[in-house]
Length: 74
Ligand SMILES: [Zn+2]
Image (cartoon, rainbow, N blue to C red; front, side, top):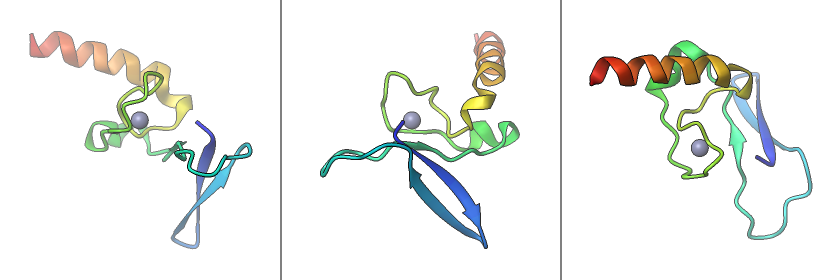
């Protein structure tokens, strides 16, 4: 993660949270709500990524939901 997103006047702004080198991939969270998490899968492939575009604040809750979902699907 080297950037964050912010919505202002219906535009999404991507703000770098540290210096990003030329050619470096910009990684940021979309801060979608937890409710929409499963509708917004993330394909960045990062090992640190939870797999859904959800604000990092929601990650602990989302992990529980994923665990629950995986149990059900078995
Ligand atoms: Zn991702």
